[in-house]
Amino acid sequence: MSKISPCLWFVDDGEAAAKLYVSLFPDARIDRVQRAPADFPGGKAGAVQLIEFTLAGQSFQALNGFSPPEPTQALSLSVNCDDQAEVDRIWDGFLAQGGAEIACGWIKDPWGYQWQIVPQRLAELMAHPDPETARRAMEAMMGMTRIDVAALDRAVAR
Picture (cartoon, rainbow, N blue to C red):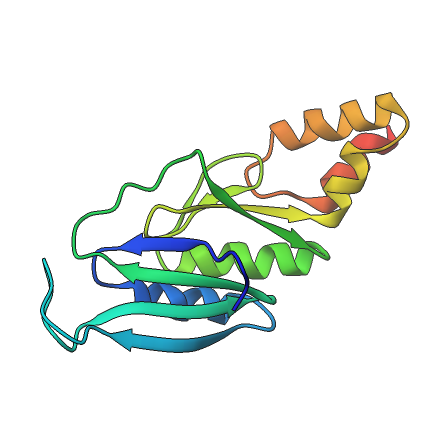
């Protein structure tokens, strides 16, 4: 487990969320499912309480808190994707399970957590030493929902 692990709060479906996340990322696995050893506010002994899982080498926790969580835009999970195929696979995986598109490469998962699905090419273009190239890339990105690498390349080539 990592020294610092994000802990995502769910009502009672943290295990379902962890299974979805694990299905979308490489080097991903559910490491441990912990059941409550005793009754607790909102839950009974034996209920799934904490799920530890790993995505692309980063450890996470999913906590079944048995009360409605309030995900916030102040925290999102950013995924650095190698190419358009990886962007599409992750994006489509979230949408297939009831996720919602936001804008500029952001998508909300079925539990309300926000993910930034960022192709490496966008990061390269936004940090380009030519300010005009970086500007064109940013302007193109601002008009997108899912990031389209080919459209970014066309925008900076004009």
